[in-house]
Image (cartoon, helix red, strand yellow):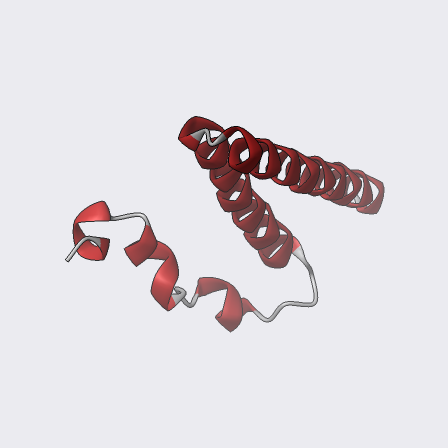
Length: 86
């Protein structure tokens, strides 16, 4: 089981590295080309990076069970557009 866990973490870290590169290229290209679609694609990659970070955080065996179940304050609010557009 430990081998599978390590393999999963390696895959998640590789995915995070890809998302960082993807976000940097998309945002930079979007700013240079003045393309809102490219900038939005880059921002989507940043959101996915936050999601991958939470997956690693919740999968780490050293994290206490109480901290894994406690909801974070801003994560659910950021996904509701009606609360953020006031």
